[in-house]
Amino acid sequence: MMREVTVQSVEETWALAAALAATLRPGDVVCLEGDLGAGKTTFTQGLAKALGVPGRVVSPTFCIVQEHGTMVHMDLYRLNSEADVLDLGWDDFRARGAIIVVEWPERAGSLIPGNARHVRFWHGKENSEERKIAIDF
Ligand SMILES: Nc1ncnc2c1ncn2[C@@H]1O[C@H](COP(=O)(O)OP(=O)(O)OP(=O)(O)O)[C@@H](O)[C@H]1O
Ligand SMILES: [Mg+2]
Image (cartoon, rainbow, N blue to C red; front, side):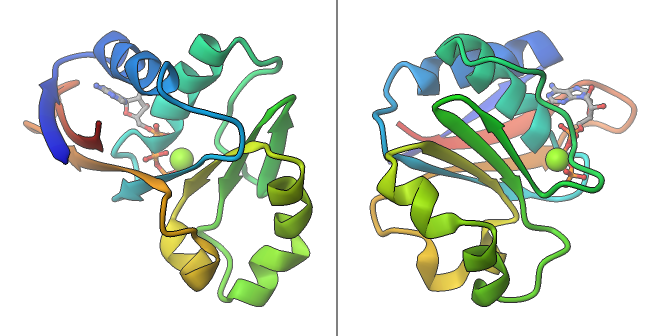
C-alpha cells in the first residue's frame, strides 16, 4: 500500500529513508520516481546511512552508477533504453544480490522486477524544504 507523508526537512526525508531501509533485503530494487530536485538523491543518502554502506552518495554527473558495497545507486536520467541499462552491468548487480536504488526507473522498462519497492516524490511549498513522499510500506 502506498502511504503518503509530508516532510518538512532533509532530516525528515532521511528518517523516512531509514524506515524503508529497515525493510530492505538483499536483491531488492528500489525505484525513486519524481521530478528533478524532488529529493531522490537525498533520500538515497538516507538509505546509505541507514544501511551503513560506504562512500558518499552524490548526484552522478558523469558516472551513472555508483557502488556503495552492497548498495548500488543508479541515475538513469541520461539513458534511453533498456540496452543502455544492461550495459551498466544490471544483470551482474542483480545476480550478486545488490540492493539497487534507481532514479528515473522509467528508463529501465521491463528490467524493473515486479516486486520492486517504489517511492514517489513531489515538491511541496515553493522555497521550502517541504516534500511529499509516497512509499509502499
Ligand atoms: N525535505 C527535503 N527532502 C529532500 N531534499 C530536500 C528537502 N528539502 C530540501 N531539499 C533539497 O532539495 C534538493 C533535492 O535534490 P536531489 O538531488 O535529492 O533531487 P533529485 O530528485 O535526486 O533530482 P535529480 O532528478 O536531478 O537527480 C537538495 O538540494 C536538497 O538539499
Ligand atoms: Mg538525483
